[in-house]
Image 1 (cartoon, rainbow, N blue to C red):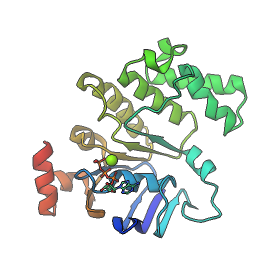
Image 2 (spheres, rainbow, N blue to C red):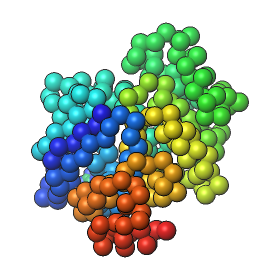
Image 3 (tube, helix red, strand yellow):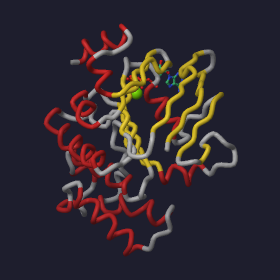
Length: 240
Ligand code: ATP
Ligand code: MG
């Protein structure tokens, strides 16, 4: 589903991703962790072409992201991305936030888009808030809207970059619960997070990054029970 072959990227002289290779199968949930600045956000953004790379190849669902012939707008519409900050359109109410891209990108008619939006808002527990504006919702609610908005596009995979790290503690679980449900439904997911409870519960594999390298790419059990590198051991000790 998602394949990275020897992906390298530089910002000027700075080698931010170094020869990163991994593949994520359909239905697999992969958690990406590692110290600040190790390249996690950069890595995940390369997957939908938000960050160009200088060498290597990336494929999503058989489409080469890194090929000049690939239409990135089409690709991005099928790979949902949820960031730390909710990035909803502040001037649109919740239902319109969910309808806009369905109409513009997928060319769905208004009724169809609205139905889809309502179904997904209900699924994330927000059917009471469809007419509100983002600023009238809590952080956790806004993040659930962001997830529902991505799901409206019928994504083949979902990318998450620290979706709960800007939330107050009492709101973290309501967002993680939605993600856990998605994982159990078989969504292919790549999730940058330090929520190790989430990783233990639903991840199939954990990627541990440091200084642009994928230092470990191991089944979850192995990562938690016997990390291979001292760096991963130190990291786990520091966050748990
Ligand atoms: P964090 O846990 O803090 O989010 P991260 O693992 O997501 O960190 P990245 O945001 O991918 O790390 O950044 C990796 C490195 O690349 C950092 O050293 C960062 O300073 C550098 N970097 C990121 N974006 C740019 C940019 N546009 N230009 C130059 N350097 C950048
Ligand atoms: Mg980051």
